Length: 88
Image (cartoon, rainbow, N blue to C red; front, side, top):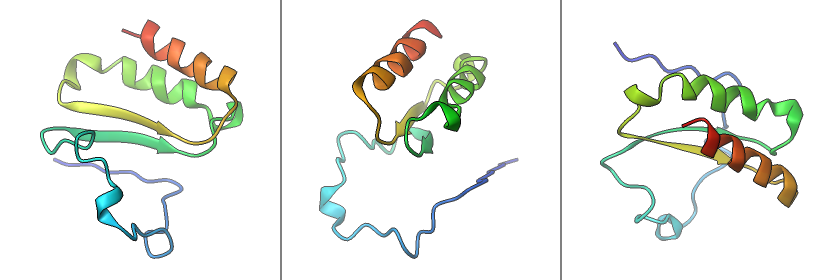
């Protein structure tokens, strides 16, 4: 079974890729699936919860890449990076 849940999804009619050549194909490898969260990297968005929830499933996520996309100050980015590195 395939389950997909998107609680505050992105309006793909509004946010379209205007130039597909801008996508970094070396990063978006078709051999992987991607799980991500998009939104400013603010504590109210609970990125820590997202990372901790995924960390309980690392062994089952061998062919996945995790993406966190959003703006933040450098200290918040470093904090989330540190959490990712320490979750295994």
